[in-house]
Amino acid sequence: MANINWRTINIDALDPESSQNFSLESLHPPYPQVSSSEVQQLSQQIRQLLRGGDAEGALRGAMESAPYGGDAGAKDVHLGSVVEILQSIKQSDMSPMLSRIYGSEGGPDTLDTLMKYLYKGMAQSSPSNKALSPQITGFSQIHGRGGGEGGGQAMSVLLSWHEKVVEIAGLGAVVRVLTDRRTV
Image (cartoon, rainbow, N blue to C red; front, top):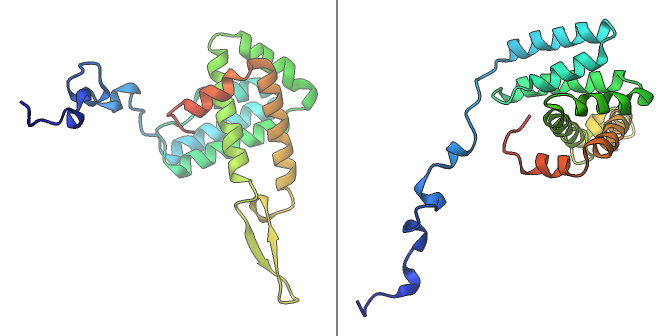
């Protein structure tokens, strides 16, 4: 027993509550696979609600049916739908709508999901995604925010929504989004 170096003993293997003794996959349930065609059908239904004037219903529908089990294409299609909804809602309607959503059953979770989409939208339109467009002069012009002119407007909308969500749901929404393993 004198030959054993006590510093090399893995005490976590002896602890019954250690993470080595159970699968980390059990911390969150598996999500059903969602195909791109299902997300496109959902996107059309959401657009129908939006055209019918029910922006709040469209936003709730999009947040409650986030494709956590979908592939990257399905998630991008859903992100496009969410950004379209957010851009169609007037700034004066944001706070009352978010307050109603937050006060309803499952409201904080809905706003957390909205915050996830806001961050994903900001990440996709960030200046780090730069595209080069060749110019006649031989020089290249670097375009941020997706390479087009309308990216600044989308970023402005996302930042306005971020401000309103933090105002209604508090900074806890940001922390929950940053620590959640589910991605949209």
